[in-house]
Each structure stands twice: as C-alpha cells, then as structure tokens.
Length: 180
Image (cartoon, rainbow, N blue to C red; front, side):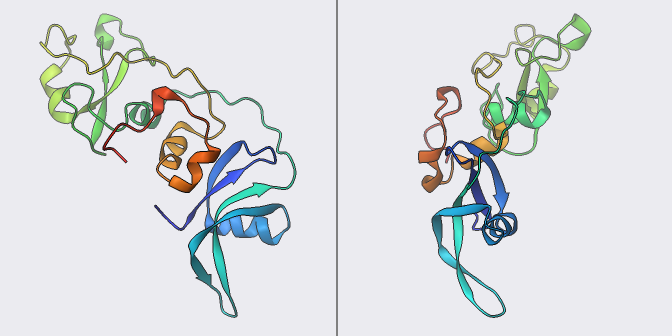
C-alpha cells in the first residue's frame, strides 16, 4: 500500500480514479474536493505537518461518458490477475498468448487472449492448447462490467482495505485467496 496513492470519488461516491497525493492535495487546497479518510501518516511541508489523505470526494459531480473497456495487454494481464493461464505462475514478466493462433484465424479479442509465462508460450508455440497438450486454468472471457476507473487501477485499488467499501464488487475480479 502506498501513501502516495489516493482514491478519488465523484460527489455521489462513485470511484473516479486513483491519483497521486500531489493531485489530491491540489484538489483539496483549491476547494474542489474534501477528505473522506486519512492515512495514518503525515506529510511534512516547509512550515507545517498535514495528515495525508487516503480517500477524497469531489464537491461537485464530474460528468463522464460511460467508458469503453479497452482491450490492451495490461487489461488482459489484469483480468488474469498477472497469472499464467496454463501453469499458474504469477509475476510481472508475462506475455500475451493467442489461444487460437493468429495464423489459424484466431482473433485479437478478449475471448482469445490470455496471460502466459514465457516458458508456456514457448512450449505452446503456434499451436492450439489441445495440440500442445496444455490446458487453460479458465476460459478467457470479456469482462461483464465497465468500471469508471481502469481495470488495472480497479484491481490495484482492491488491495487497499480502507478503499474497499467505496469500490463496486465484481465477482469475476475478486482477489483470489492468498493473492493480496
């Protein structure tokens, strides 16, 4: 958990973003946001000591169009909890695998892309999982929700205990046991 991250809520308590502490302090000082909850640590300035915010809420409603859930490398990795979908190894050094290879007509879609470690990606090569005698941990699916904050930010925000009350619950993205 970082003291430098702050959950930014809309006036109706809908999560808008995870911002840095500098941005949050600017919103507070400009009178655009109020602190809902503080960190247990303080910030030191040249002339004062301030309690660091953990959650801030905008004083006015920020109108936003419903965001589109973009298919990106980082979103696929976040959907799969940074876990290889073949062997289950967790880490940041993962690649994206086409379940049905592109040369066989496999599309660049949520239902055909999975997180994969380099070892499994080399083993699978340009074959289907059946041809490579490999099995997926779970079938890839397009997420059925669209959060206002990005998927990677939403998953990162779930790790902050004091933020969880303000985050909508999406069962498909619940933090797996032992992966906090």
